[in-house]
Amino acid sequence: MTEPKLADDEGRLAALGRLQILETPPEQPFEKIVTLVRTVLAVPIATVSLVDRDRQWFKAQRGLEVQETARSISICTYTIQQAEPLIIEDTHLDARFAGNPLVQGGPRIRSYAGVPLRTSEGYNVGSLCAMDTKPRRFSPADIAILSNFANIVSDEMELRLIASTDFLTGALSRRGFEEQLGREIARHRRYHRPSSLAIVDIDHFKTINDSFGHPAGDDVLRQMGQLIAKVLRPADVYGRLGGEEFGVLLPETGAADAFVAAERLREAIQNHRFEMPGGHRISVTASVGVAECGEMEEPKAWLSRADKHLYEAKTSGRNCTRMAPSDASARA
Image 1 (tube, rainbow, N blue to C red):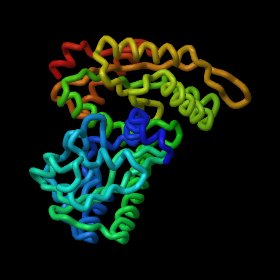
Image 2: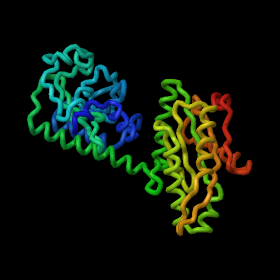
Image 3: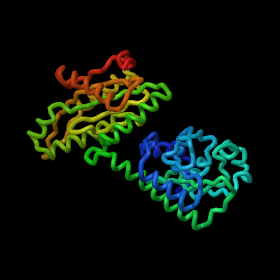
Image 4: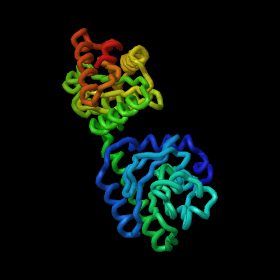
């Protein structure tokens, strides 16, 4: 990995965000790896640690009772700053960590071996760690084993992303999008920040298939995915919910601003000319339903509320946006 990427924390955070793995529930591949690390290396603590902007979050852990810690006390934040594994035989003898709360208090980390988890772009987004509560020398064989497991973790993070992506449009699959909604709801509950959801449905899509054939319909869907990605902000997320329906997640966006964003997207679709086989270009419109995140929300309920307003847009003549009033969202 090149030195600039080691120092590029914003690029690293973007790479971590691309993986869409923070705040996800336990998954068997990662659980198996930390279990194997603890067993094979005979350590009491093993973690898959992901370093966010201000915290480290554990995708999987054995021997710890917490889900996350502040980044400021994370040993892994040092691991991601280098290309090679970070090995500490005795934290009490290392000035960087001797006074660390995780060393002086629970879980009383005394020795540490961490291998950076590197993305396909070459950024270290976290580490696979083996920790002991007593001083220990990790042998070259131990480090090789941990490094091999770290490669598996990195590969698994990329593979889970592929499984969550719709192959035709490049958008998240419905499963991947619902997982993203769950993470956004958790963030909303934790920080009390606004967030909104839009469902976009292509009008009269059956007519396109009937007139030009299903391959042409696929071309429209593919171009629709590209257009949505172009119009959205970097922090926004979109997924294909099924057929000709797309979901758009708008973090840090209240109802009024979400309506403006949805209208901007709808107008971009209306003004775009979609290429058809034989050089033909056609106009396409879309109907949009918008709902702001409520306090007691769940992903399926949030989708259902946005879908209700999509139905209103459809019955109002299509090519329009309908939205739940913000006060109704707040009561939901």
